[in-house]
Image (cartoon, rainbow, N blue to C red; front, side, top):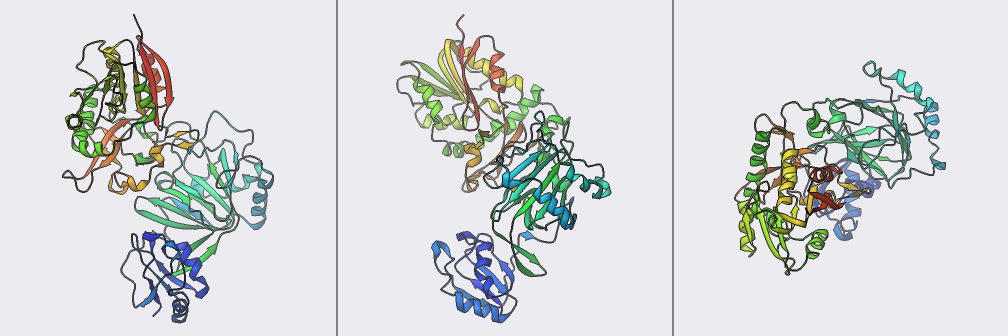
Length: 557
């Protein structure tokens, strides 16, 4: 028998394929490795019985690669279980082309020396050294600033590449190039190059060491070996829909002809060539396309009747269904909001418009707190907690003019489906403020990065996601022909108008995934809306953990 089971170590308790291969390679040539997802065991097999026996004799109870550096325990089995390996080899995603030996040794040497990384003072990234030509590729947004070209254009030394391209790419002349130097152990996170930034195709020339690149689309995971001197062409679906990335490690396990081969990484340099897009992307892959929501002609959210129906289905009905679970996830008040509430004078009347489960009610015992919300389920949660509250729509608050000293409206207005309705919600808040009264408004920001730092929403552990992305279709038909893209949780926003998934706990009576409508705000968009109201002045505006925020004051007449 050639097959060994490692009884006490697998993916679920931290064993990786890389550690396994590195630890067992000295006992002979491996023919297969199988680490079933979510299991605390795994399987390995060698090409000969003698090698398998040598491994078992030397490692059983002795090799400390199990959890907490404990020894592994092995035994022989006759056949492998029928477990499908999720990783596919020797298959290319649609539209992906690899041209091996695209350049010769002399040309490779020329291009290896061209960036002069040894003397390069700038461009030293956390994971690799990088040099840009034409335009700087900004990794935090996967885009470039088209209005800020670099002084260095793509070197003429690269011109010999273009005549060699296949006929269908004969007109491809790039105007942006990123050169990356990868040392062993370095990689790049999985991503899709922003649609509106670059045309189709994107090409990458590999120099020096070979590397395995991971291509993923939903549950599909393809591993592609990129040899040195090869040209990778991403076009069509592989460019627009599949993510690509390189896992940071010092060697790759390459599976071919039912054998696992260890490929030790060396120094690798890649030239990625792109051509800037001028205008909107017109692709068919709308869930990954940042241009889609801007160019669609199927509907207009400016129609108030459509907007109202959309809010009813994808906001009001959703919150009635998820009220209890939503409340269970909302506990800790945000510091800047607490600071605003505590700054109010004793005896002030504070109205929380869209109060949710009331987590901001009652924080300041020296003021009178009252909340309102469109969701009767959430209002019942507030009442059970002893708060003063009532059911009301933020577009028509059932309070008299000038009755509040202060208002807060946290994560509410972004649920309204067009600009007119969002502006009217702010006007309604201003209406109930007394002259000199202040309001704090928070809305979700489209940009979830600030000073290259991820927001908490992006940083949160993906195991806490409310929904598995693989369970979703790309777009959801709604009312009157409206279609909106579904956002992938814990990722940067690609669209301004979208649906964000929420999945209830398994023990809930209401099962399934609910989709909430959001309009995520560009920088200054909220300020501009407030600036359009004559009786308002903005006293403060800031960015707070993925949200745009303003404090406004009602001007005294």
